[in-house]
Image 1 (cartoon, one colour):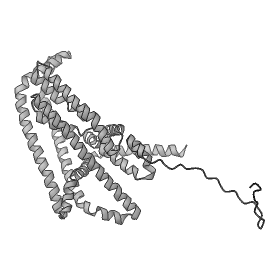
Image 2: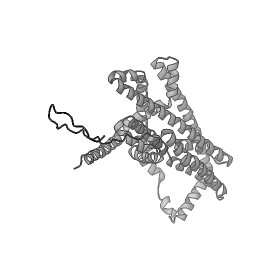
Image 3: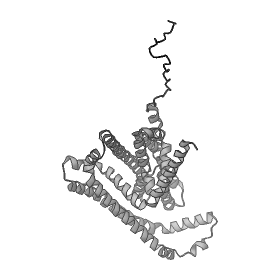
Image 4: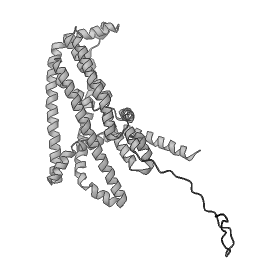
Length: 370
């Protein structure tokens, strides 16, 4: 068998084994990766602490204080939205039941089959699963905080450790790769946050003008779901449209306007501008971004979908700095990056010098033609 085929099969098996390990050990790898990305998001705060020449523990305190402030703001906003949702539900519960029954009749499903279900009994049976999910999320959150703290403690000594662990050229290359990864991921997260914020603000303005209930909550939901490329922007359109249908039924004029406006915002920003801008900013092909979304979504679920684009960017950066993997970086890159990439040198076969068959001491033969 050809050696290249064997190497290709071994590489494929290694990739499948790696994906399997990442999936099975997701309880450890997801908090670790999320902690690293939180560190990149809070990188400006960390740099401010370095400029102020704070001690490592004071710098960690500054970072965690900033994180706690955003957490408290988010928690208070969620609590306010839950209270508003309860008020809206009590006001529109009858319309919701009528709309649900109309949908069942349109699908030719008898409502008697649904009335036989005891929803409280189903909720009690699933209470154990819900409690296990809450405990699992809490443990991952605690593990993420622990990883983040140790990363912050280790960050000041990373350059010195790389310098002493590797020789000069290798150490400088590793530091360059790490700096490039941190810079591009921070730039990606900043650009994605601005795009998602613009999408959420536009959705909130449209819903507020059209007097749709929970407009602020739908705007924040749009902002959060926009971090999932393409798919998130589609999902974010559904809840406010359903709310408009329930609120303004039996009329369909305002719900139709809500659907058209939100779809226009999501298509223009979420499905056209965002993949193009993020692809050019990271130098990654939009097709590879979507394939990465599908792959990491299957391995890690929703966290994998959120982290898919930065991960493919990191893979591209590492491949760019390794000569043997540079063709993979060109294939992952966007069309503009491939056009600007230098062509590999063309290797030509050198002719072997002719052996000198003349006897020792004999005069060299000269060409008679001048």
